[in-house]
Length: 308
Image 1 (tube, rainbow, N blue to C red):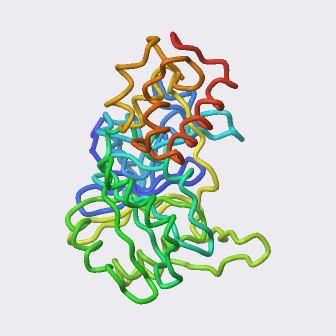
Image 2: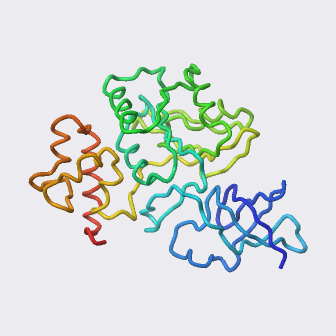
Image 3: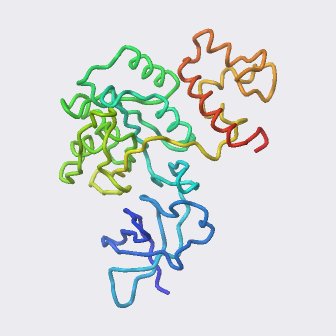
């Protein structure tokens, strides 16, 4: 069997566009299920590297026989299918796009993205729509992300403010743009990578939320790198993290967690908790701690304990 290595550009209903040797092939998964990947929502995602065979008759079609090892992935839990769903794979940057308004700034969403990135992917937080104004509380929240080691940019696709800075950071990289509907992902991408004419939509005035304009993740190449455009995501559902290890995903906890009186400590109600004391002393942002508690509650509701 003559096999080729390729790169998944996009996939819908088990039909994948695979890029290899300057050509694009339409491929299906051989046998419908890849070995060891039966219990996931989507076995292949934009950015995945695969091995496939070319059809002897239709030279632009093929069968995928193997997914090669991933360097990293960004995924969430899909409640509808009750399985993990990979949004993008093998990326250099995860661009977390939020807006300062219309729709409102939602730090809980950002915090959940940071948890699921699991320190394995470089993250850039992009606060778009600065032309609408940025509240002081939002500025302080962004400064706290910087304090704990996350890069961020406040920009405007409308006015072009800081767009060149963003372009310089992601140049030469494969970046996945992820965010809630309406924050301006596609508008930003149209400015950063002109010529692709990605669809954009107005915000719904009824619920102050965006409308979906992207239906599936898609990897697009450029001479100076490339990007993965992803559908708007309403929520990031956490999975694969036990409550005993959640604190390790909040990097600002590290300086204090070892001093908790009880080990392990959930940092919720135990006496002598150094993390809670740090929150009280203003050394950990109270809103970040609230995000931690909400995620912890969700994990506890799923029945996980310290030992898994």
